[in-house]
Length: 425
Image (cartoon, rainbow, N blue to C red; front, top):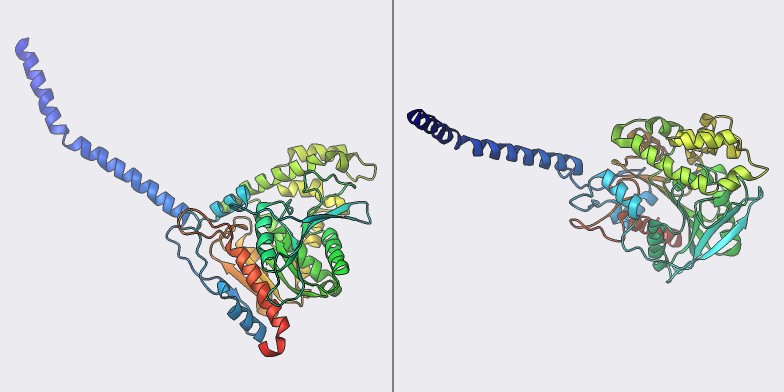
């Protein structure tokens, strides 16, 4: 028995000596494979191998466009996002959505209230310039924020503060129902393309400051409203020097088809934006559903609770504010794609290739427009996400974004062109 046990022990020791050199090597190989896989995924997700390039510019070869591109070198130089995460459109969009901007200032403005003909009350914030403009002229930026946004959002505050220091007066529309502390005075809130409140704000600025000239700026949904407003009536372009639209989708009817796709997680973004819209609508539940003049029914409230997409909310709630018979009619009549070709003032349209909210197919609209119309410049960046455009060295972004610098640089160039047009030509 003792001899047998000795033989068994010897055999085990022999096996151990035989396997032990191979097992650590196998485990090391598995660890290296796991690390390599993780690094590969990180590189793919963060697009670390993607180059940084200058924006793709589409425009006609005119004296004004040549002057603008020469006077705005930022448009023709490469946009460099933060190295570790800035090449991901999802992370740019998520950071913008979560914090807007880092270390955003708090410009002090005066809130204005404008009664509308249908009983609604439009509000906007007015910020006076903090310096003298380079042309020494009186110029006002009229700004339309993104969906459900207002003058207190960090990206708006950052842009306003920067514009004030460059000598611009700023008027920022607060979308109807977007401010949580301002009650609605009629059973209606902002929609995708209603220009009534923006028109009222611009009219107030023109009347109050008869000597001022206007720079129109729109972000995302605000870009659609701004372009639609200018294209609706030639008179709306009086005293307007130029218009800048950033990250808009141009056609809601075409965009809603892409919003139901899982490509680029667009369906998830749709759900998150719908959830935010629900909160805004429900915060004004008493006004929207309780007033005698409301077009809403109890069944609409039930459908709102069950809605999981913006299209369902638009179909059950938003289109009814203006009496549209269908969601198709609502999207058709509220999209700037049917009006933007009527704009004759200089127009800068900016989008990003990695915007998870605006599908690539929608970008044929501004590109075709820039190819056909002399007053249009279309700038398409490779990175930037949706309203992100963060800049930075490696990890931490700068407070001021590439987008802020481009808008003000373009506006300055337009103002100089108008001031010294004979010499420029």
